[in-house]
Amino acid sequence: MNNSILKNIIRFVGFVFIQVLILNNINFLGYINPYLYVLFILLYPFNGNQSIFLILAFLLGFSIDLFEDSGGVHAAACVVIAFIRPNLLRFSFGISYDHQNLRLSTTPFGARLSYILISILIHHFILFFLEMFSLSHIIIVLKKTLFSGIFSVVMIILSLAVFSKKYR
Amino acid sequence: MQQIFNFLIRNKNRILFLFLLALAVFFTIQTHSYHKSSFISSANSLTGGIYSWANNFDKYMHLDEYNKRLMEENKQLRNVLTNLNDTISVENYTDTSSFDGTYYFRTARVINNNYAKPNNFLTLNQGKEAGIKSEFGVITSKGVIGIVDRVNNRFSRVISILNSDSKINAQLNKTNHFGSLIWNGKNPNIVQLIDVPRQAPVKKGDTIVTGGRSLIFPEGIPIGSIEDFKLDQSESYYTINVRLFNDMTNIGYVYIIENLDREEIQELEREDEQ
Image 1 (cartoon, rainbow over the protein chains, first blue to last red):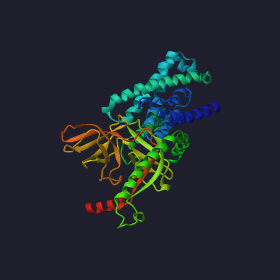
Image 2 (cartoon, each protein chain N blue to C red):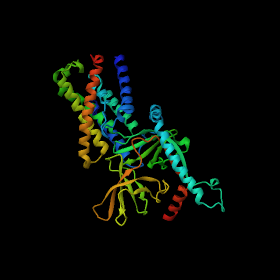
Image 3 (cartoon, rainbow over the protein chains, first blue to last red):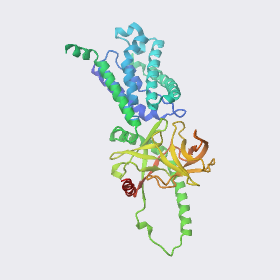
Image 4 (cartoon, each protein chain N blue to C red):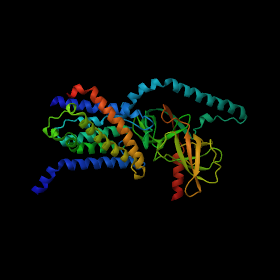
């Protein structure tokens, strides 16, 4: 258990640093950035305490906001996907989620992809919508959600593949 | 009573979620209201320290380019200086260097710069200890960058010209017709000058400079050149697309301008109102 707490703390700090120092400066084609840090929320132990998980998700988003001067947009997006994560897990993995011994690396690729894709799209939509904060720019919001979303999903699947030994 | 407690315990995650979401949205709304903007900013010692540490690497990669810019600026200043010596007659010579000027310049380095979001900020590595306060102007040798917004002891945050809250007074270099400079959030190289009266002789390629009505910037600091223009819906004002002289994606070192007369002018204007 201690091992798991330590691992999550290191992951938390590591993701924040990678995100704000490297990934936020990519700006591919002017505005496309991958948001890899969401992986922390996707990977957080499935049987962990839900309240602590919500608070951690808030703090994660809030640390990104601090660096980015974006108020609370990342925090809001993170809290939302942390809150609906149990539903997403049940939707993507079906019954095996309820057995509580689910491991992301042993799940079929299709289920894993749908879990990551849906979470990322919801996260990005809330993020960019709050960032723009107006309904008249909804096309830009959707465009950003789509392109950044694809970039994030690819990045997350690649990093899962590279570090998959750890989660086996 | 028992039932209320049961209800709270059963729904504690839902309540926690709503509370955290409301908090996050509250922070978001705060940053969208100009100048009430929040105690949270990248100008605090934790994020500022990390940015300035990370920026040290970046600085070395660009030293060559910073040198080139400095040479360019020196060349311009020297040209101005020699021409001045030629035209001023030396008979009524007063040593103006002993006077306090109207503007005082400081230098700082940009340690964090974003330009891809709808509301962009920069972080500088100088703060209160260097005498910087909010509402000071920030420029480079090429043109305007933004206005200082929040300051702590060692760092300060600048509202970039690429921010939907930024509104800077600007004018045509040739004719003094002025308008407000805003950004529509699309292209980090193009900003919009609005409310320029129809009578103004607008031509493609003309220079836009800061206007004299601003208490923050001196008059005549370059901003950009006219890319294209059209009349707005009321057909009485121009909306002009301005291509910035500065490359906002690559800034480096900046000058911070303090207007020493600012408080006196404001006091005068306040008296006028009463």
